[in-house]
Length: 235
Picture 1 (cartoon, rainbow, N blue to C red):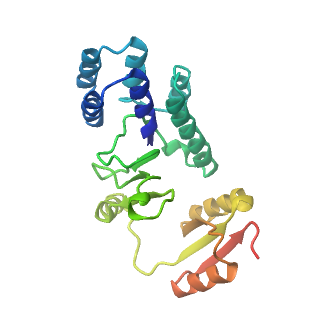
Picture 2: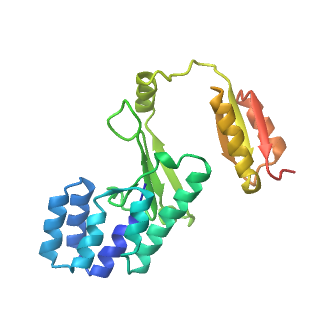
Picture 3: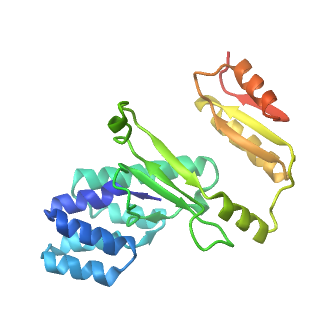
C-alpha cells in the first residue's frame, strides 16, 4: 500500500522541476534505486530530501513507516504518512494487518491517482492480482465532481493462484453475507472469522445506507445467497 502524496509532497518541498520529477518517478517505479539517487544528485537536492526520497524506494513495515514519519517536515507528505497509518489501524480491526506492507514508491503510470494506491499479491502468481487506488479528481472530467476509489481484479491470475494453492472452489458452493455498519463492525468481523474458520465462504459487506434491511434480503435471495445476517442498527 502506498500514498502518491508522499512522493509529490517531498518533490514540491525540494523544488524539483517537472522534468526531474518525471525522471525520478520513472526510476522509482521500476525500483532502480541507483538511478533514482543519480537523478537526485544531479538535481542537487539537500541531504534531507535525499533521505526522504530514498524511502520511496523501500518496502516498509508499520514500524518503519512510523519511524520515517519523524523525518517529515512538509504538510502534504506528513498527511500521506498519517493516512497510511490510519488505514493500517482500520485493516487491523479486520485482523489482516500481517498482510500489509507499505511501498512509498508505488507510483502508477496513471497520474490521476490522488491518495492511497494499493496492490495485492499472493503465492503462485508473479505479479499483483489486484491493483487500484483513490482518484478524487477524475470524475470531475466527466461532469460529476465526486471522490472515488476503484480497483481491478485480474481474474485469470486469481484463478491460477487458487489452483496452485489447492484452494479452487467448486461451482455452486454456497456463500454467506454478513452486513454491518460502524456500530456492528467488531461483532460482525468476529462472526466472519468464525465462519471462515469453519471453511465457509463469507462476504463481509459494509452497509450502504441507501439500502434497507429488506432490500438486502431481497437482493441476496435473487443472487443465490444462502445465509445473511445483520450487525449494527438496521430499520
